[in-house]
Amino acid sequence: MADEPNKLQSVDGPLDDPVIMRLIKETGITQEQAREIVSLLGTVNWSSLMREARLIKPKR
Image (cartoon, rainbow, N blue to C red; front, side, top):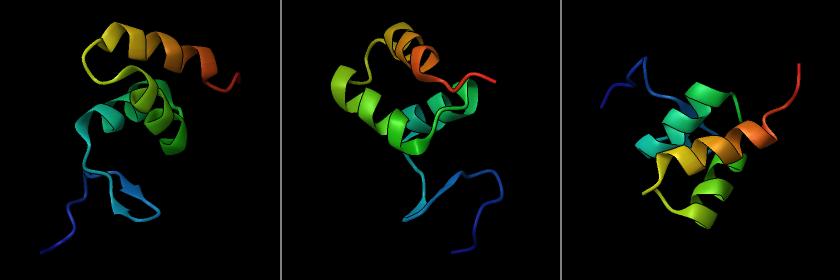
């Protein structure tokens, strides 16, 4: 199977969870942070996930 150029890569290989991929892409948080938020809140409430991701996003 060839690598797909649009897939995010993690240390362990492709990052296939679409919720985690979207959190990373839309907020700029790390994979580890995204996984932690999803493990705490689940994947049902997108607005809650986004709120938490924005709170921990590094300030520029």
